[in-house]
Length: 107
Image (tube, rainbow, N blue to C red; front, top):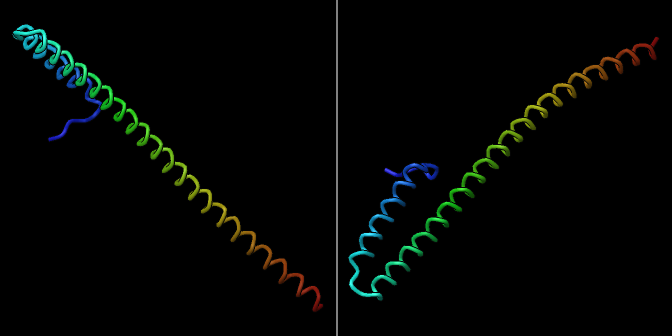
């Protein structure tokens, strides 16, 4: 099962769990080198989290843009249908008037 990108409480819990684990590892580290490596890994994880959050924002923006585009396309289709109906009505009126004009010319 996959999680939604906007599941912020879950993301916060994951980040808190990583921080707790990193703190425990840092406390258990026996050398400065080990502690420095743990700090680097936590920094990398933090940057990765920022990248994922940015991608999630971009995905939401893309989805919103798609929604707006679809709404506009549907609106354009409705307007085209109205225009087609009006065009047909006007063409029928023109044909009617042309017929009347032909009858008048014959008389």
